[in-house]
Length: 317
Image (tube, rainbow, N blue to C red; front, top):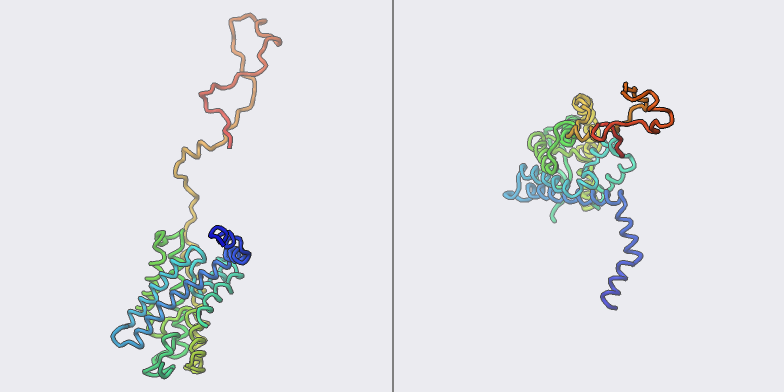
C-alpha cells in the first residue's frame, strides 16, 4: 500500500470519521476538558500531600497549598476556554442552581471528576496513616459539626471570590491572568484556614479518592473514621451556594448598569438614517417676470430639493 493510499484510507476510515464527529460535540469536549484538568490538578495536589506525609525533609504544609493552588492554575489553563475548568462539583452545582449553567451539564462535569480514580501497612488514622494522602480526615481537635461549618465557610469564600474574579461588571482579573489568580485563591484558603478540616472544599477532590483507597486496600475504615466521609460531599455545595448568593445579592446587584457608551460618537451620528422632509411646495417668490411666464404647462414636474452639500440625504444600511 502506497503512502498516498494509506493516507487516503486513514482519512476516510469510518471509525476515524465517526470518532472525530463525536469529539467535536460540545458536551464531549467539555467532559474531556474537565477530566484532564481535574486529573492534572489532583496529580500535583496529592503528590504534594504524599511528599509531606512520606518524606520527612521533602514536603511541608506550605508545599501542599502550593501544589493544589498551582495545580488548579494548570487545570484552568487546560480547560478554561472549553468548559470553564470547574474541577469542583460544588462550583458546578452552584452555577446550575443560579442559572449560569444548564442542569443537563451537571452530570457531565461531575462524572468527569469521578472518572479520574478507578507498600506497607495501609492505615487510616494514627501517626503513620497514609489514607490522608488521598482524602481529608478530621483532626483530633475538631468535632464533626465544627468541621461541617468550617467546610461551609471555606467553600463559600471560594465561590464568592470566584464570582468576583470573573465578574466583568465589577473589577475582574485581567484577561489571561484568571488562572494564576484562582490558583492563588486556593493557596490563600489553604495557608490561612486549612488546618481545621484539610479544606476539602470540593466533593470531586475528596469522595473519588476515598473510594480509591477503599478499593486499594485501606478498607471500610476510610468511611467509618469519625463518620467524616459525608461532610466533604454535603458541606461544599451548601457553602458554595450560600457564597454565590451573598455575592450576587450584596455586590453583584449593587453594581450600576450603565448604558453602553460609544467610543466614537461621530460614527454613531454617521449611521443615523436621515429622512427627506415632507415634499411640500416651496413658497413662490415674487419675480420680475410676467405673471403668465410660469404657467401650469411650463411649470417643472419635480420641485427643487436641497443642494448636495446639505445634510439631507438617505444612507443605506
